[in-house]
Image (cartoon, rainbow, N blue to C red; front, top):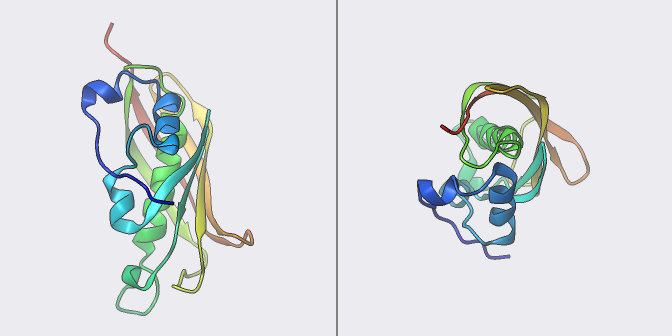
Length: 157
């Protein structure tokens, strides 16, 4: 599948609630974010409180010690966890990551094949939310897991 990458204006972004915006990315109505083109991953599923990104670890992601750089897995998980929270925000609200806790449990390689980062909401307060997630291959083998805390900025009335 061919993906379109790019940005939308802040006015377009805040004209959607979070879930509608994420679903618009999945269906191609708005572009996938540019970081996905850079690292080779994309948003594939979005539901309230749950999102999935898919990526393919490749040789271009390798670090000097001969494995996929941990930043590849961290970026997929950061995206999934943040967007799980994003899927719960109202039209006009904004958000940002405050903290990311990330654990690698086995190395990725160019031979791993496609991986899926799934993020799930744990707690949604008025201004703070947390989520958790994992990065697995197609067989379900765990490669990394993470948690995040995000700050939510309600729209000004």
